[in-house]
Image (cartoon, rainbow, N blue to C red):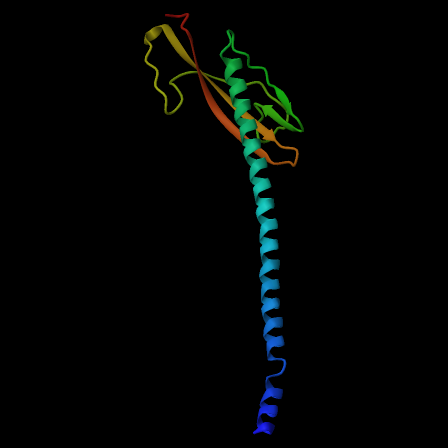
Length: 156
């Protein structure tokens, strides 16, 4: 019986070591995967932050254009703003990188989604503006807006 115990004991020797090494390898693989995923999440978060900042820059450009068009007479001069490394170029067409004046589309109905009922004493002037915002890492957002402006009707 002593020989059997000794032989059985010898066969089990090292099994605990093998299980421990296997568990450590499994934990190491999970840790490496978690570190890789964490890096990807950080990169995605930074990219999202830059994209949102660039979009808000383009939206600010539309707001600047609105304020300029509210003046009497409307200021249709193009502008190019520096945003601490990023830029807002107003009224730029997609094929031309230089600022261009805000085109006046003429008189007409209000932009889609709006209604104006003020009688015949006013006309609705429609302007079209394109705003392009570019971030320091070259992320680009382009917004286009039709801008309506009420002005006194000199003909009636």
